[in-house]
Image 1 (cartoon, rainbow over the protein chains, first blue to last red):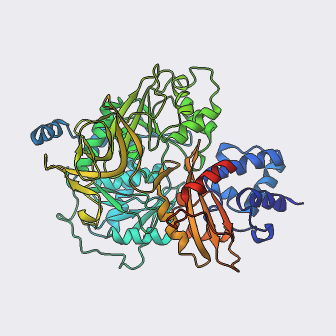
Image 2 (cartoon, helix red, strand yellow):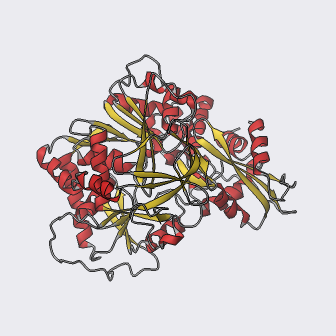
Length: 83
Length: 517
């Protein structure tokens, strides 16, 4: 499973348990679409840190890094490369 | 009684916000006014930025029309609000979590033809947007005096226009007069010892009424506002770090903030010893969180502060750290100049122990919802005609105990606080019911340690529908503020449990939800 699939699977299990994973498009805006709120975002970040062994600095908790599956995936990739 | 209250009100000295701010700029231009992302912004610099924003306002050629202000929290958005105050121009400052069409409707209702935003936070450039459905330029409001105007206090002039959290349709608009803001910021300055060299944490978004204390009262009295970045407002570590690094002395926040801090509190006492005043507001704090406050803030006085957007802070209770209440925190006593009444269901005043709806009248309150007649809103005369004040029906059911202390019992309607934001579960249900694929719905508030309450929606879809939570969340996001979107949804094909009168049984749904965890 690549990052995108792993992240999608987590998000669906956690926030959209009745939704088939393939229904969640990688570019779907999860914040303005009402899927993830501010507390949900914390859960997502904690999971990303744990699952991908990356550290999310306070400064990086910019919503734009976590708006879509694609953005999260890019963030993880980038963090692993630089980290 | 009437005379007494009036006397109290006139005795409350009322310093003009703008004049006090200007005096601070002259008095200590290099003193810090704000801290943003670790960097201080001095009074001189903030004033310069405000003057730039004010120049933007005068170049826009919109006469005396109110404007919309739409921006995330930053020094430039603070400067923009300052510019409006200096320009004595009323401005609508709506919550940024509202759906786009709701925002535009609010701007139209407030009479704004144009909306100003901070377009580039690095250069502090502003940009204008035209409110759809308006001409976007000149307005029929005209200035009383054209040309360069100097500031002259006008207690009746409308300044801030805040919004209620209204979970369906456009929220109500709450205009605040210059006098109301001046009186409130004066009270806050005295109560919390605000002044030069004093740092105050600002947690809430710029559009929240809480900013009148932590941003606007602080700037009036020469203190320094430590701005929390909205995107990090739920990170306990970030918040703790801000408190320590900037030696914050006053913190005002909803219980969720303190709950987040308790999770990262290292318990090596003294870490947060700079804090002298801790204000809990907006919701009831959980007892397991309250017991941690005295240890976490060893040098602080602790307060439970009760208020509404319409009236601002009204009642205050100082918590004795050596004798913490084991049940609900008392609401405390009316602030100076505030009158509070408990009113029975039949409209009579309850003078003894028992439960009634809380009515308050404060020197800080709005003159009424914009564009709504009194009888459609919640502003009423004294039930007995004992004074000539206007009272606000808070909708809060309050219990007066034998010893006279007051505690919150619940609501006269279906409002709950979700992350400190008022949300009406009936309104959320009403929105969901308009979805063509929903046959029935029950929304319940489930108590949550961090958020206060979280919403759960139990829905039955119409037979053959492919409705799922992704689609339903999208539908909600288009019609509700983000805070009013249920945290969990269950979509079933089975009928919902019903009461004997045939309505969806919210209590049973809530109980089932709680046992599922």
